[in-house]
Image 1 (cartoon, rainbow, N blue to C red):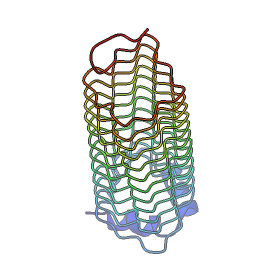
Image 2 (spheres, one colour):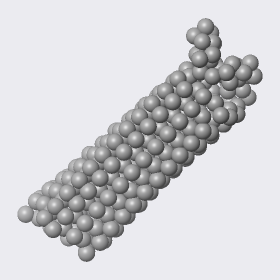
Image 3 (cartoon, rainbow, N blue to C red):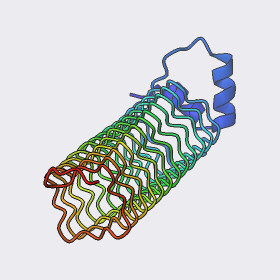
Image 4 (cartoon, one colour):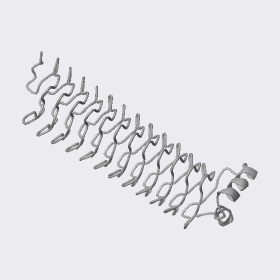
Length: 279
């Protein structure tokens, strides 16, 4: 449970709290677990390493707050303003961040497994090597976000906006990207095997070397996409579009390639569904 004396200090706002922390830097552990904060302004607050397990911070102003290595697992941060905040290495597993503003937040290596990020604004956020497995990120805005090497296995990204996002080397095994927007996104060597990508828009995206084996790609748009050296074996591409896509040396063995629109696509060296190499 939260320390009542420290809770009273924090309630006074970021300026008072930051002064107290500077004067008491020797105190390593600060317990604010299950504390409830209503209508608070913690913009710029130094909360690194603080235990905020299951705390209520709904609609709180945490803009530019320092929350690195903080424990926010199970916390309620719905509709909170965390724009440009520092959350490096923080634990937000199972936290409620629905509709939160995380614009340009620094979340490298942050733990967000099982978190609710539905409808959140993660535009230009740094999520490199973040743990987002089984997270709900549906309807979120991740425009130009960086998720290089992020772990997103079994996460839900349906209808999310990932325009120009960086997902190079990301783990997206069994991900749900139905009707998501990934226009001009970078997914070089990303692993999307076993995922549901039906209706997603990958137009102009770079998926070179990506693993798309056993994926549902029905009605998926790959117009002008780079799929060179990609693995699409056993994928279902029914009613999809590969217009002007680059599929050089890609693997389409045993893929469902019927009713696919492929005008102007480059199949040089591609392994076709019947196992034949296209010349």
